Image 1: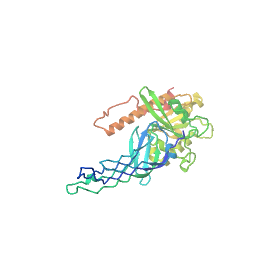
Image 2: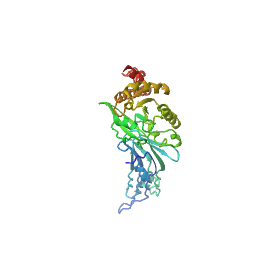
Image 3: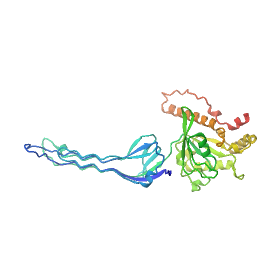
Image 4: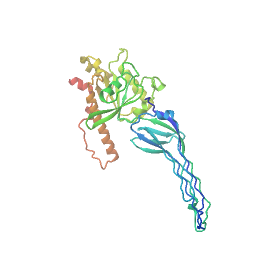
Length: 372
């Protein structure tokens, strides 16, 4: 199925039915009085999050959604029937924005979340509501109200704990295939990944997290080079970024340090907040380097890049180092979750909770290599 992460649609809620001005007329009932019923409610347009959908392609080809009007009221105290609502099932992670005002109407973050995008009009009142002691034969009734009409922009931002960042052919797809259930296209040429892929990484029986792979960036993406910044929005909800670097590029003239700095530069041009997210450096393709030279190559990269954060050296092809990396990621996510709970509920959360792994010792690849 084609991956579509943006769409524009129009929604028209139904108009409410009119109330009825009717008088009861029956034999032997000389003072029947008013019996006009109310109009029915117009149908609404409702968005529902569905975790079984992962693309907005249904809204690329069907762009107009119009609910039915409510029925008019009738005599004999008959109320008009309300119209059925239209349910639009969207992927979890969809943001719905009103194009006219820029207001965010819905941010669908969990399965079966429901948000009314356009409310149907209320039905009008029949004349039985206007009966008083001095007005026993009212002719008044009200018309049904118009339903809401909106032009909407749908934008999908996938929900993942961890996002992969890197140049094309850095080995991101190989890595996500090695550690998760995702099966993106893997080949020995750039831009094999053309749309985001999600995978669930299981560290243990009840320990897992979601990882997202997006198409690779290249220098000049801000100006539209390659696939540009088209898919970077999918990293904005992540808690941790893994910067995958090809430590053994096929072309000897390619400098991995320069490539890594170019990626960070493009990230900062796109979104400073995204660039400020926690980021770990993952040096990939150890299998392409002689075992005796690996530690030196890692130390040289870290020194020239002037990197102070966590560093991992792995091989996505042979799975070397992947298990340790995934275990440390899960522990770091647990720490972030605990810190968030402590911030939101300080009176209820034990701030003395400690985790087994020490953040300061996580991922020091050069030290690990030297000790070996």
